[in-house]
Every structure is written in structure tokens, then in C-alpha cells.
Amino acid sequence: MFGGFFDKLKKGLTKTKDNFTEKITDMLSGAITIDDDLYEELEEILITADIGVETTLYIIEKLKEKIRENKIKDPNLVNNCLKEVIVDILGEENSTINPKETPEVMLVIGVNGVGKTTSIGKISAKLKNSGYKVLMAAADTFRAAAIDQLEVWSNRASVDIIKHQEGSDPAAVVFDAVQAAKARKTDVLICDTAGRLHNKKNLMDELGKINRVIDREFSEVHRETLLVLDATTGQNAVEQAKQFMEVCPIDGIILTKLDGTAKGGIVISIKHSLNIPVKLIGVGEGIEDLQEFNPREFVEALF
Ligand SMILES: Nc1nc2c(ncn2[C@@H]2O[C@H](COP(=O)(O)OP(=O)(O)OP(=O)(O)O)[C@@H](O)[C@H]2O)c(=O)[nH]1
Ligand SMILES: [Mg+2]
Image (tube, rainbow, N blue to C red; front, side, top):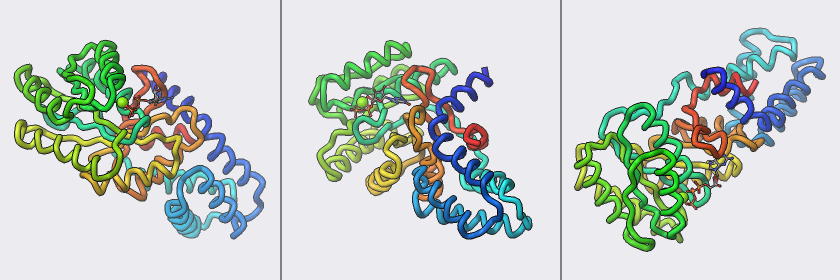
């Protein structure tokens, strides 16, 4: 089981590997000494792998320190030091999808198309398989298709869903879902939200309203706000996160579409520049293609 899991991660990261670790290995194997040119080339590779300028400079600085401390002269040993620097940034703590406390309300937010609804489907299936009682709230009422899409996932994951008509008030959907969750003794209520809001004020108003309903109607509940980011958008994802952080506190990130992108280095950038944990990663479109983020495993799969 574990082997399959790791293989999927490795397979998902193939393009990132080609774009990042392979390039570094090639560059290092051609180098004779560890000099400024080597660091410059490394810097360029890291930046093109969407690690971001700020994080790249930090990595280079830490790498230089490590190399100096360990008196390393052989370019082929740089790779291992780099790996250690990245592990230090990502930390050792493994993420879990399981609620810290029950009942929990999980708010899933993010701009349109990043993979909110899909991730909710995958999370529901995982939690349900672990024995939790899950309920979905279709609080993206912006278009009928969004509600239908969540319903398809509710059937796939065999969990219940609370929904209203297209165009209805998202906070009213959450209100009903909270009443249902209390009555049914639900462990985790997962709310889909609209990404297609016109501006930051709309977004702020809508999330504020939803949060107030939860405060008022379910004050004892543990709340988890997860921001979904699309890995294929690279550094843009970091910018999106900064915008959302101004709107509401974020407990963790779901980074989707890591499969098929060469921009997986964004994981490092997110952790370093935002200091929000990446909790879950999406490695495909299927119901099983969501993994809890394990920094050590991630780095092993990358190198
Ligand atoms: N390859 C891949 N595709 C994914 C992943 N997660 C989501 N997708 C795809 O991304 C597309 C958008 O996903 P949705 O779940 O509809 O995104 P959303 O954020 O709910 O979008 P809106 O409701 O329009 O705001 C779909 O085609 C998904 O199948 C992933 O981890 N890997
Ligand atoms: Mg959606």
C-alpha cells in the first residue's frame, strides 16, 4: 500500500524532477569546483523551477553555510547538502487529513478552477473510509453546475450533501448544513465555496458571512480553513495565498495538480514565504489522488 503511494508521488513529480533535480545533477556532474559560477547556475535552475527569488536566495545562502561548515570541495556532494536545506525548510512534521477535534467544519476556499470541489470529493472519501461521518455543504451557489458537480462527488464518496438552488445565499446553505450536522452527529462538515467572486470585498463579505453563521450556530465546533492552490500556476499561487491571508486566517494549503507540472518546487516557496503548512497534495483527478503531505517523502521523491 505504502509502496503504491510513494510510487504515485514519484510519478506525479516526474516533470518537476526533470525540470529541477535532474538539471541540478547534470550541472553538478559537469562542475569541477564549487565556485560563484556554480552558485549562479544553481540559482537560475531554482528560479526557473518556480521556487521564487526570495526562497531561492535563502536556499543558496543556507547551502553556502553548509558547504563551508562541512568543508565540502566536491561538486557532487552539493546535491546532498541541497536536499538537507530543503528538508530544513519544509520541516519534519507530517500532515494529517483527520480532524484535530470533532465536530469540525472545514471551509475550502480558493479562486476558480484550482480544484476545490474535486479536493472536497477526495477528502470526503478518505475521511469516510477512516470511519468519520462526513457531510458536504454546496455553498458555491454561483452556478448550478457547481452544485451538480459537488453532488456527483457526494455520490462517489457516498456522503450526504446539503444544497440549495443556484443563486441562493451561501450563508443560508451553511446555516442548514450546520443544523443538519448537529442533528446527524456529523464529525466533519465540509463546505465548498465560490471562487468566482468579482473582487476582494465580495469575497471578504461572503466568507465573513459564512464564518459568522458558524460562530453563531456552531460555536463549539473546531474550524479548519483550507486554501486550495493550483501548482501549475507557480509563483502566482503564492500571490493568491497572500491575498486570501488578508481576508481570513488560513490553517493549511491543499496544493493540487502536482502531477503533470514542472512547478512542484512551489511547495518549498509556499512553506518558506507564507509559513502555512501544505497539508494535502493533489496528484491526479481520481478519488484516490490526494495525499497527506509528508516533507521527507516529498524530498525523497524529488531527488
Ligand atoms: N491533474 C489534476 N487535475 C486536478 C487535480 N485537482 C483538480 N483537478 C482538475 O481541475 C479542474 C478544476 O477542478 P474543480 O474541482 O472543479 O475546481 P474548483 O476550484 O472547484 O473550480 P470552480 O468551482 O470553478 O471554482 C477539474 O478538471 C479537476 O479534475 C489534481 O490534483 N490533478
Ligand atoms: Mg467548484
